[in-house]
Image 1 (cartoon, one colour):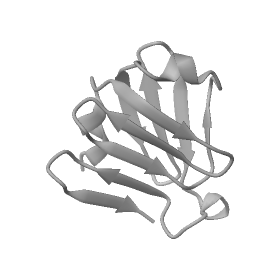
Image 2: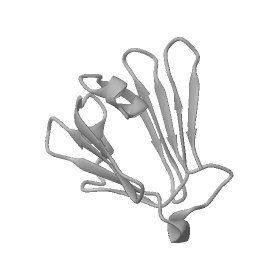
Image 3: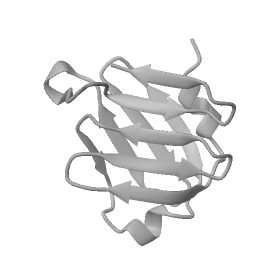
Length: 102
């Protein structure tokens, strides 16, 4: 089954919020990705993230990898120990459809 996250491929990150517990991104097509589970970027330089385009998405039961064109990798961990709740990840698509990973 194709991941809803593949709709982000080719989309540019236009806004980004990161704190110690969560991350949120808005893309040029107005999609919104909110991350509540444990996650990590291969770079902590926000300036490198904003303006970057999504190159690829790989989703398994244990992890979501989102690779950007500039080589930065976002890993979102979906295992039980990484769960924070109320959901792991939320994607709001431009037409309003909401997809939740829990």
